[in-house]
Amino acid sequence: MIQTDPRKIIHIDMDAFYASVEQRDHPEYRGKPVVVGGSPQGRGVVAAASYEARKYGIHSAMPASRAVKQCPSAIFVKPRFEVYREISHQIREIFYRYTELVEPLSLDEAYLDVTENLKGIPSGTLIARAIKKEIYEQTGLVASAGVSFNKFLAKIASDLDKPDGLSVIHPDEAEAFIENLAIGEFYGVGKATKQKMESLGIRTGADLKKWEEVDLVKQFGKSGHHYYRIARAIDNRKVKSHRTRKSIGKERTFSEDVSDLNWIRTFLTELSEKISNSMGKLNAAGKTVTLKVRYKNFETVTRSYTYPQFVSSASEISQTAIRLLDETEAGEREVRLLGISVSSLNLHEGGSFGEQLELPFEIRRI
View 1 (cartoon, rainbow, N blue to C red):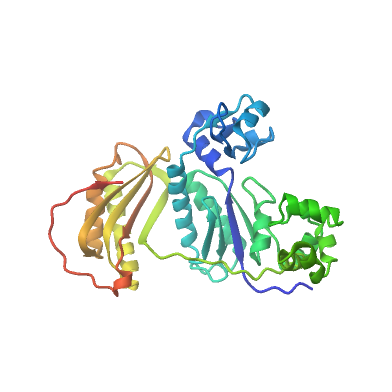
View 2 (cartoon, rainbow, N blue to C red; view 1 turned 90 degrees about the vertical axis):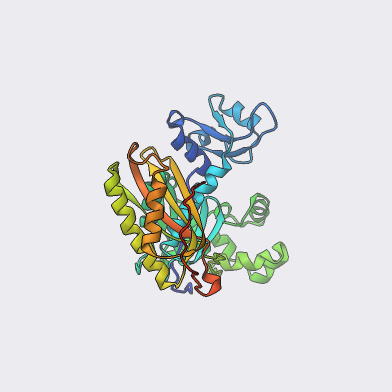
């Protein structure tokens, strides 16, 4: 009988992240084999491949020269890491709406512990589904999710039904699932270890489970302890969040694109009230107000103003955001998302807000 704790762990993994961003931003690439990485004419390496390119056996870390031989029609695109980082930040902000326990593994994947979540939703599966929906609505990108009671199983589950998958491994299913799992599918078992295990007759989780811990340690060193535990679905690693809160903000994606400036200004005023209330609960104030606007075609712009002193009132935030709005094309172009955030917080200073001063208004573009 597998002993489990009551944790609810989600692993979110963006599907073909870099390549999907390029296909999103370049409609002519959609449905075609896209390879993000270096030039196939040089010594470039594949950083990511779309699912269309993967059908030709192209994968990350493959020499680009080899990739073009396997798929001469592939579209090679240089990486835009600044864009990927910005989108990754947007996705993480979605995670933090549900839990503070977020452990990013890279730009495109993270663990979340939603056992006790900020929305009080009792089901990890429902949270995973909601997160996938928000990611798609706000970025136009697709993610896969795995849900289970520990990190090891959640990670494996997220790979089961890609792309756009959502798989759950319940405690009462874990034992049979692992016993039937091919050893090469175990997260943490690389190519060399797989070959060694198969040479020892270990081809499935059931085979691995037959080994005593002391014998696994003799064969694989300290990793033997890990292999012994995961064969029994034991993984007590916690989701480790090292996040220091840098901003307080809110945003909303609209069901219909909007262009009415009066409606937008009213919305920003209401959003500022909510942000000010949230800041009040934390006894916080900030110096930088940032307006975020995402247009109908998913293009996103931000405009910021930094005060020399801390601000926190709804009127200060809304007046700043509305003035920043004039530096965007909102109204001329349809808008699908609006957001406001306040950063450069004084949380470490015990809430010393300072005195409000009247100063000339200048805009800093980001």
